[in-house]
Length: 115
Image 1 (cartoon, helix red, strand yellow):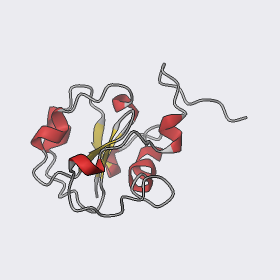
Image 2 (cartoon, rainbow, N blue to C red):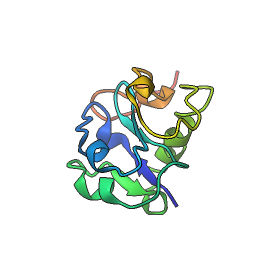
Image 3 (tube, rainbow, N blue to C red):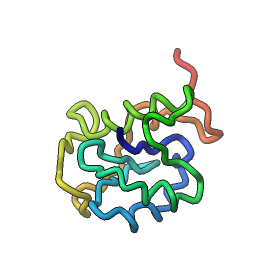
């Protein structure tokens, strides 16, 4: 089980979650934050402090939120950021890159239609 940041974070990026994370497993992308599924110790502090309820345990995701488990995992892959397992957030791991689904997300919270 891992914590996942969902669409409610897109274009909000409050950042309160990053301040309470004891292992610095929350990384900043261009439009949202991402939780590293391996580095997360599942303490739940980020979930309790998120002002927009963007964070949930992966087994509590609604069907609409379920793709964000994959989005958070894939964000660290060679296909997106090549971060791998950096061992905790640092200034060097902050990027303007996002997962393609997040990059294509429309401002009103709806995914851009596939063409």
